[in-house]
Image (tube, rainbow, N blue to C red; front, top):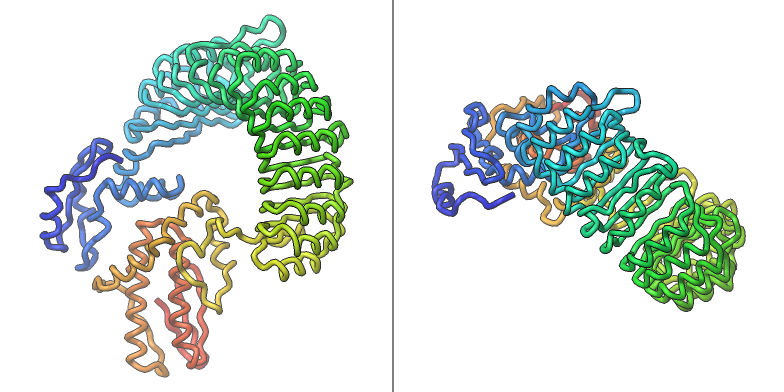
Length: 607
């Protein structure tokens, strides 16, 4: 976010009276602006500590919030509106045609955007070339661009965009109608382009008359190319062949024969580390060509029925650094024990193996377990040959295994019993659609292996991993009277990534520390509390103290802007008060933001 305020301002800030607001100096990222007088108002005699935060700190807090919460932040005051806009690097806009007149005002507020997404739905008219050119003039520092269903864009618009945004590093476009000329303009002008993802590009001419795409200036910097659902994806052949530093190649549902192109690619591009092939026409010839990539570490073969054991064996013999292998055999029975045994013998560094629609037996699994000592993740799905014997073999041989997934296999509770005594490093077992495994068998495994998370496909909520973000990460303990799901249900709409980011509060218990620091602030505007006759005055004063803390935390809610922390604090407060009210025969109910204590005899306490 840039450098903080000058050191000379620090002593004066500490010596100043806390009743006055400190006007922080702005960095180069956040332009200076006089704070609104209304923002400096004190809350009934109490210091406004949130307003004392420098713009840099406030911007850092905003960057830890979700998009929806950042929008709410901008509505708090004019200062927050300014800081939020001038610290936002990522922006997603609805790319309808009526966006054009709003572009100047939008990018006057968000003037340092480097990552932009323009998305339109299928039933609406998208933005055209004029809007895209205007955006490119306002955002010359763009490094990432995502275009979705912008069907009004043409080659001319993309050419102008590429000339204005030459620092682009990542481009993703889907369901657009510009063609090869627009794509070539991007490749010729954006010399630092590293990632290119193209899906359903409608403007590419089908057939032999298709204009080739690439290589362009970007070929020397490209590291990832992903092509999805293209009628004539092979017109990207010159680009793929010319990308000497290409590390990742992903081909999904692209028509045409890819064997010849893969031979040309792997003859010139040998630094490939990751290859995904899904539903494309490729045979053992293509796999043999891929074997030229001796540094290959990740390979996905998904629904490529022409690939057999011979091709897989040839690839494994030369790609000995393979770490992750995903095979979806589509139940074609073209890949089985022979190919898997070759992988086991030639690829000792294998860490992750996913087999879908493949029928391995005890023989291949035993060789895999014996030779691949680093195998940590194994998934067996839709296999007719994986039963209790095979699971017992895995339990006995796979010492390093940490995660095991079994789906639609003829496994029973006897297989679960074998896992109870094997795989010492196992931390998670997931069983789905295995009719032979009962709830009793899963419970028995949980009882024997308390540290192992066992998920059975029974409609029950999944157990949380220790690494998953959750409410416990915040550092608030649940009271025994309140069930944890009641809190989690208030945050169902939150994204998992944002919940994970809340884990940063857990290390220092920021909520509790902040509450203790702010609890000494005197607020005189809290609502009065009606104390029933059966409660003595001393206890009533303690309840008023808790009410002060509650209202102070309400002010903090404007800073953290998340109901998870708010509700967690309420539950902590309930736990404290419930313990005091237990001997009085009272109960507590949490409804929204109102905490009600209902006496067994008479009277109600609300605050």
